[in-house]
Length: 463
Image 1 (cartoon, rainbow, N blue to C red):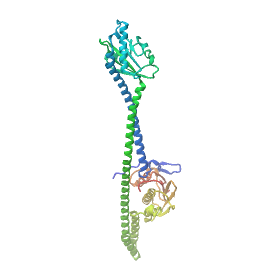
Image 2: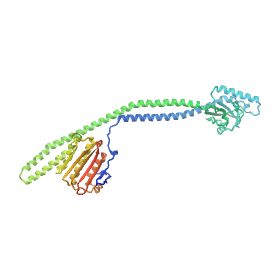
Image 3: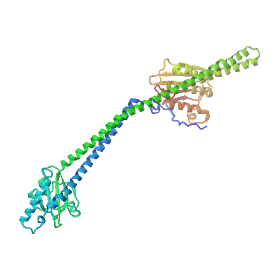
Image 4: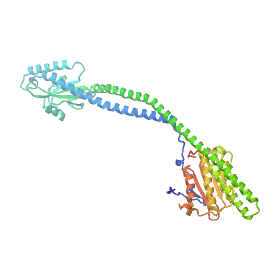
């Protein structure tokens, strides 16, 4: 059979006490009860935070998309205006250096009339028509007409590719000096052609605040939809979550009830077997021992002594079959049963237990299991005459010490070994680890042995 190895973290203190297992609160088992309110609150908070994050991220993304759509709409409107209004309103004379002043003026007035009909009121801040050499051929700002500036690379690309585009205007440029009082502007441009096919650049300046307002309206609509969806999901989630939590709680209670019933049935069966053995075979053997002891034959008296030893062993076994429950019968009664094996072999047992002892049932059971194993080690290995069990109770821990006046041993060498003869020390270590407690040992050859376990009173290990 394969045994689980338990690593030793033993260390000796100044007084010779060996720390076999150090207390570690992280190992301490806790109750398995589900904190329903905390679970519900945590899920709702997580859902709210997650929903708000998703809605906020979606709103920010929608803002960017709305801005992009607004810019694209401005570009599309400019391209439409260029094709439907500007090009039909252009005359070759507007860009012909050989045309006389009257023809140029007439061409500009015709274009101005077309633009006024297409862009009434405050639709655009500024409108310009550029020649490819950078000369402004016409603008709704007369002071710009005839001035020459350097066209940007994007402007030249628009002339060559006949594609529309838009960008935030750089108002520091000299050609934009008359637009600096209207806030940030979006300039959209599109190539247009005179009747003779000469390419010109049509440029419109829109208020960027209008673009942002359009984006804000779209963002607000999306935000209302996103946050409304999150609210509806939460309203639907909470009842479903409550229903699931109730079902889980009911299922847990049903499992606990079935477990309690199984444990009760097991305990009842043990009590029945113990009662049958005590009232049947044990009484018969005890009676036979008494009868043989009354005989004068030395051989029969020796047999009677053997039978009395068997009766004592049987009674110890009965205590193990149906031990006293510390939370029901008291810790003292349960520890008295745990020491039955020592008494059955003639060891004197001294038990000191305060009354009352306040601790969780799991902590009480851990103490009883530890004492039973430590007493068994004493019986098998110590060759002692007396074993003492002392319980000290504090609000935070139970301290149980099991000591004997036996032969003792070399602590370091024994604790470092894992052979079958020292399996009991491994079990004692595991008891301490299971409850998150500490275990110390004081022993030396010829000086007896003392095991001391400290168990947290609130431990919830399986009893």
